[in-house]
Amino acid sequence: MPVVLKRSWAADLDSAALYRLLKLRVDVFVVEQECAYPELDGRDLLPGTRHLWIDEDGEIVATLRLLEEPDGFRIGRVCVAADARKRGYTTRLMQAALAETGSATVRLDAQSHLADMYAKFGFAVDGPEYDDDGIMHVPMRRG
Image 1 (cartoon, rainbow, N blue to C red):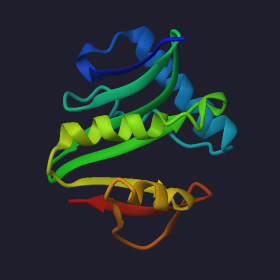
Image 2: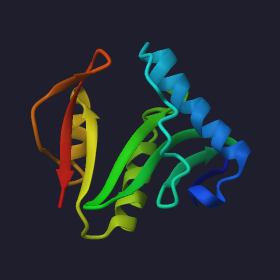
Image 3: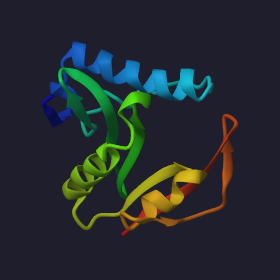
Image 4: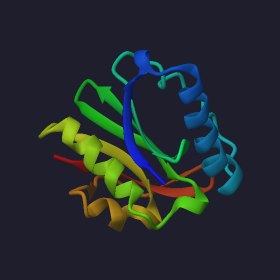
């Protein structure tokens, strides 16, 4: 079963891949985590947006979104399909995203229970914990 890390600038992302990325994110965040929130936030197709994902035998099973911001980068929408967890896919995606950011500042908003996992990539809590649609989060920063 081939497993491939893929990457695309927003402008180069074909509609079928975008659909599959969005479907995975909705499956995880909206359905599994029972969190109704505006998934389509207008940032997926911005010129500086990059999408990274893991394709496992033709299926997108993990993804993250890397945004360029005025003061660095932002990682978000990190998710793995329920049946593909515990295979190191988040690590592969995070390593690839951080390779693209170099020494620039990178921010993310982590679900609080995942803060220790992101700390392994050099992120530190950078503000108070807050409730985002019923799920506790902490802002984190690297660099």
